[in-house]
Amino acid sequence: MPALATRIDADLPGHVHRVLADYVESRRRQTDSIGTDVGDALAALADFVLGGGKRVRPTFAWWGWRGAGGDQECAAVLRAISALELLQAGALVHDDLMDSSLVRRGAPTLHVAFAARHRAGALRGEPERFGLAAAVLLGDIALAWAEDLFLTAGLAADALARAVLVDVGAVDAVEQRIAELTTSALDTLAAAPIAAPAADRLAELAVHTTRRDR
Image (tube, rainbow, N blue to C red):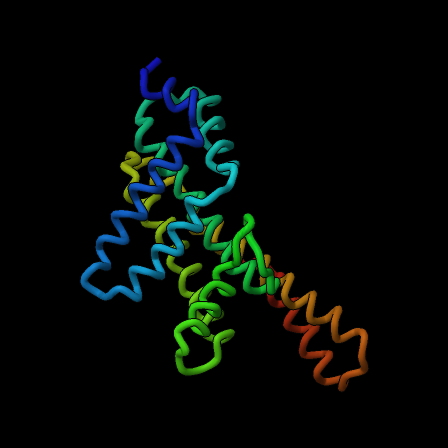
């Protein structure tokens, strides 16, 4: 059995963390020429990605691969499964925004933190809208990073050809949230009378957002 595989087995969360730390730092350095505002925003996203989590998704992926006999191309597989944490980070940033959550892992959620930055800097516009926009964009960046890390992990061409993990996983996650959003809106509206055409339109939207066309 390759030595790298056994070392990763012994401390998988630590190896995933190092892959993510190296990746986000490399992406942050690429933005140095753009300006400090972008760098500061990406640093906040990096802190969110690296600041906690049990690395459950990479753990399931790694041990599924190992259980199926995998012990070659360990470095590439490690990078590929680490992309799952970036996918999860993007989903959490957007979930916190949609759920109006104030705290995540003992710290302010990103939209709350960026609204606070807006207030502290006495910037123009509404702090809450600034925080909302920042969270949407940073969540999108995390999803883009996930795909980039996965596709550049170094997997063999035939493995990449079989891989629908990032694309399908991301789409399914978004579709599920749309369905939940619509269901929540319908539940809220049910508590108060509304015009029949509006109710019909929401019901139609709910049907369309939960439909899977493959």
